[in-house]
Amino acid sequence: MNWFFSLVLTVHILVALSIIGLVLMQHGKGADMGAAFGSGASGSLFGATGSANFLSRTTGILAAVFFATSLTLAHLASTKEKTTGSLMQDTVQSQPVSPPAEADSKAPQAPAETDSKANDIPK
Image (cartoon, rainbow, N blue to C red):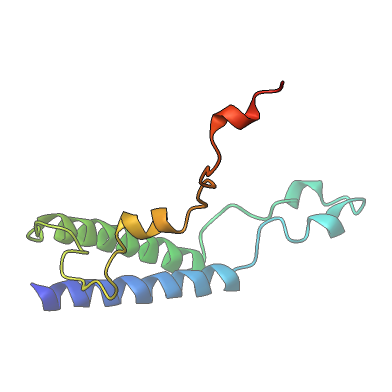
């Protein structure tokens, strides 16, 4: 099952790169729109919409293959056995956690009173 997942993933990546290349090579329908203004070619502003050429057919076929491989990868990922537990359960803690008593010893201490309160009363 693992080799099948790797095969489908490889095909998926190659198809995605091929689609990117084909889309970048195609000539857009509105690319000549700036030159068409004022030249009386308003009927052919967005090009002919007749038959599709080789690049657009190939792009459509590769898009269908990309969709199929996406669904296959999703199905393979959902049927994989699920593990229980956390990803962090096998990690080793490098330093121990300091006890909270050390944090209290660093806190500022109130000054100790040496005189009695009787000396603070005004006469």
